[in-house]
Every structure is written in structure tokens, then in C-alpha cells.
Length: 289
Image 1 (cartoon, one colour):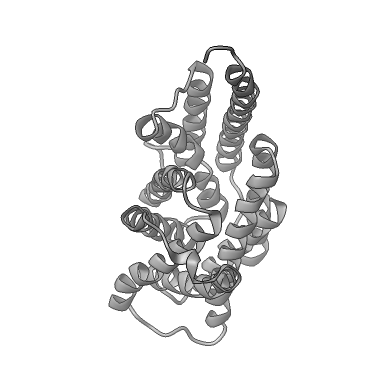
Image 2 (cartoon, one colour):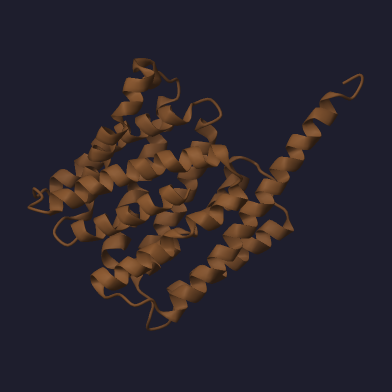
């Protein structure tokens, strides 16, 4: 998870550097194209059978929403202070909790709802609606988090029948043409070192995704969530030295509130999962059932 966090943090920096000369649509396309190149070893390892699925319509919808989320997130990285953009992206688990109730019918009790409300207070602290510090750009970042939450639920649904590597390779395959269409309208070939940034964004994004999926298989979500939040200090430090961006107290305070809410939600979900796993063998052993 620490490796995944570092990959995603450096991907953010690469996107920010590329955004100095390229449109958001092009950056998204190149991130997906070179991300697909980085994912091709999965296809070589598993063979063509990895591409066979009966869930193509669901993949298409998931990828369409994911591309729009990517556009919003990449725009925020290019136009907002990096620490603010990344902090708002961590509100995604709050929207995942809400989406899980709507789409999956999950039962969420009072304590987790309270954590969600606390997390939204953290978002409001960062966004500061009605003040001079409020910008419409912050709503773009929040929109990316909302859409990412919906995508996370769709991935959870797909993972019931689809292996993780298939989800990675098919998602990237769909993302390439979906992001190419809008990129063509604003097309300019990258120049000079910009090629390095777009290649790095693709490779780091796919590498981070692979490490993240494997981390969740190996470890407890409640233990891994605090590690994933290390992306924020890495990005904030690099943003200060590379772009001269200072982190304001509102972003720090709001990020801390969001982190606390996320940590509690992850801890609570892990507790419930362990309880369900413990009770299942007991229920199965009851006579006459």
C-alpha cells in the first residue's frame, strides 16, 4: 500500500507538470494509453482468455463514468493547489458509503452515518462555500470524488464474478478510446520533456492500481487506509518544492477531519466483515438448517 501511495503521488506530480502545456483531455488519453501498455504483461501472463467476459455493458458504463471522473480529477490537479485537490479526492469513501446503501442495499448504522457527516464537514472546511476562498474549481474536485465513489461500487459489483486482473485490463482498454474522442478536439502533440510526464503518468497510474488491488487482498482495509493517506504529505511536500505551493490551515484541518472519518469507516467495515466471517461457520453448523 505504501508503494501504491507513492506511485499515485508521483502520478499527480506528472499530471501537474504535463498540464502546463497539454489540455486535460489529452493528459487523460496519454495516461490511459501508456497505462494500457504497462498493463499488457497481464495479458501475456494470463493469455487471451483474460479478455472474455459476460459483463461488457457493465464495463462500458463503469468506464464511461470513470473517464468523466478522471477528467474532473485531472483538471483539479492542474488548476487547484495540489494539496487541496488531493485532500478533496479523499472524500471518495464518504460517497462510496452512500452509494453502497443506494445500489447495494447495504445496512449502514448510526455510527458510520455520523462518520460520513463528519467527513462532509471536512470537505466544507476545505471548500469554504460562501467565502472569498471558495472557487468553482473545488466543486470539480468534489465531482470527481462523487463519480469515483460510484465507480468503486461498480468495481465491487464486478469483482463478485470478475478477477482483479481482468478488471484492470478491460477497464484500461475501454478508457483509451473513450478518452481519445474528446482529446482529438483539442489535439496538440506533446513536446520535449512533456512526453516524459505523460508516459510517467500512465505507468505510475497502472502500477499504483496493481499494487493497490494486491494490498487489499493481503491486508486489513482499516490498517491500510492510514497508509494510503500518506499521499497527501508526499504531494504537499513536492508541491512546495516544485511549484512553491504552501498548504493553508483550512486544507490541513479539513484533510485531518476527512482522514479521521475515513479511518473510522474503514475500521468499522473491517469489524463487521470479521464478525460476519466468524458467524458464518456457526450458522452453517446449526442442526436442521
